[in-house]
Image (cartoon, rainbow, N blue to C red; front, side, top):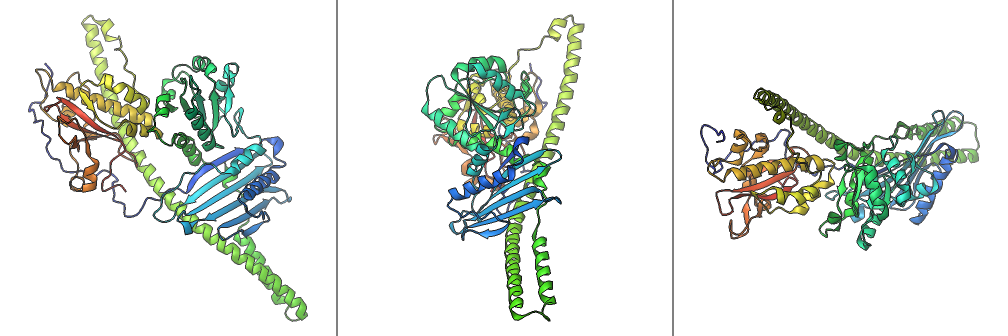
Length: 602
C-alpha cells in the first residue's frame, strides 16, 4: 500500500489565485527586433591578402551592377537613386597602406511599407598578425507595425566566396554542398571533429530512393546557408561507412539532415544532444513548411550572436570629424584671402568652399540617418539583453532546484544501497535498472509517446510540438516534456485499482506517492488567471480537442497546464484535462507547444 497524504483532497480542482510570474509585464508597444538578420565573417588566407581590398571592391561592384546600379566606389556618400544610398570609407596607416574598407548600401522601401535594408561589407587586415577578414552584415529595420523579414544571404556573399578561397578549419566554404562518397568519409569526419572549425556543419544524407522533393529541399538549404555554414551531401552508398565512423550518438540515416555545431565530441551522449537531427519522415511531412528556412535558423542565430573579430568590429575609419576639419580649413583659407585676392580667385575659392560644405551636409545627413538606425538597433539589443538576463536568472533558479533534488536523491540512493547490503542483497543494491533513454527531439518524442504512455489520451497537434525543434533549447524542452508526460501517465495510473489517489495532479506531485513519477509542483498550474478565463481570444486558444464521449463538441477548456520553461517568447506549455474520473478514465493531453497568448504576450 502506497503512502498518501493524511488528508486526501478532492479530485475537483480548487481555484487558485493567479500568481504573477517573476519579471512578468504587459507590453504596450511591439517588441523591438535585432536588426541584424545575417552576418558572414570570412577569413582571407595570407596569399590573397595583398589583393584583398581590390577583390572586395570588385565583388561589391559586380553585386551593384546585378541590381542595375551605378558603381561609384570613391570615398564619400553617393545618392545612387531615391531608394539607394552608397557610403564608401577607406582607412590607411601612417605609411599610406590601406588597413580597412567599408562599403555600405542602404535601401529605403518605406514607401512600400517594407522598411529599410542595409548591407555592409567591411574588410580589414592586420599586417603584423597576418589576420584578414571580409565581413558582410545585412540589417532589416521594418516599417512601424510590420514584422522583420528573414531573407536569403545576399548575392554579394556568393561573389566573395567565388573570388576568395575562404577556409573554415581545414575545409573551404563553398556555395554548393561538398559531395561525400564511400572513399571520402574520412574527410567528412575530419571536418566534423576539427577543433579549428568555427561554423556549423550541415550534413544531408541522401534518401534510399530518388526523391525530387528532398533534392529541392537541399538546394534551398544550401542557398540559405551560404557564408554561415558548410554543407555536406552524404551519398547513399557512403551512409553505412559514415554511421560506423560517427557512432550511434552522432550518426544519420538515409534522408535525414543533421546540423553539427562546432567542437563535436564523438562518443559523448551529452554532446550528441547538441546537434539537431531532422528525420526523413519529418522532412517529408507536408505540414512541415519552409523546412529550408527552418534548418538555416540554427546557423543564422549562431552567426549573428557570435562576436565579430576585433579587427572587423573596431576598424579605425575617418568620420564626420574629418569632413568638418576640411570645411574649417576651407573657410579659414577663404577668410584669409579676402583682402588681397582678385575677384576671379575669390570666386574659385568660394566654389571650392561650397563644394566642401555640400559634402559636409551630405555626410551630416548620412550620419543622422545612420544614428537613427543605430538607435533602433540599440533598443532591440537592450530588450534582448533584458530577456537574456531574465532567462539566465530563471535557468540559475532551475539549476539550483535540480541540484538540490539531485543531491537529495543521491543521498537517498546511498542510504537504500547500504540497507540492501546489510540485508544481504548487495547485487540488487548496485545493479542499475534498465535505462529508458530520454528523447532528443520532439520528433522522437512523438514517435515513442503512444507506446509508452498507456494512461494518456494524446490529442495534441504533433506538428506544433515538433515546431519546438527549431529552437536551440529543443532537446532540453523535449526531455522536460517527456518527464511531464511520464508524471501525467503515472497520475493516470494512480486513478485505477484499489488504492486510488483522490486528488488533483498538483496534489499528486506534492504528495509524491512512493514508486511514482511526479513533476516539480512549482511548474504545475491547475487553473488560469481570471484575465485569461474571461478573455474570449485567450479562452478560445485553450479550447482543445477531446474525444466526443468527454464532450459532444469535441473540445473542452483546458486551463490546467505544466510550465516547461518560464522565460522567453516560446516558454513551452503542456495543457491537459483530467478525465480519470470520467468517460475515458485517463488524462487527456490536448496541447504541447509554445506558450499560448495571455496578458503578458503580444
